[in-house]
Length: 125
Image (cartoon, rainbow, N blue to C red):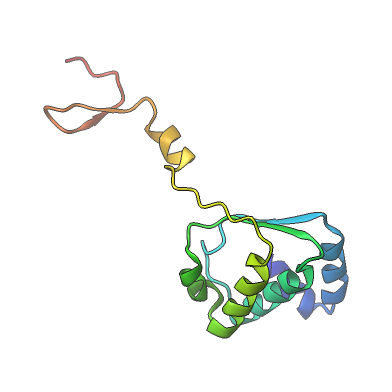
């Protein structure tokens, strides 16, 4: 999304893209923080999210606590302002269970206690 915003700005199409985003019922940002944003990407994403404040729904998934968001957005003042807007009237769901993908990848694998090595279940004992 940040890259799309940067490209739109470079092509002088940013307002058109921002208007398109404003028409969406919900914007979902999955895995926020997986890759840090450039300064320009951070500023443009802030603009989108700030404009949606109390106007449209946003869902964000992340493995980061709020204290770590500055690492993603770079600017502590902008990050604080963004968090202020995002958390106002928000439903925050803190998931403490194991990753579903990790559980799936471990399913079917077992550890042999005596040797401590992982097997695929096809070893004969």
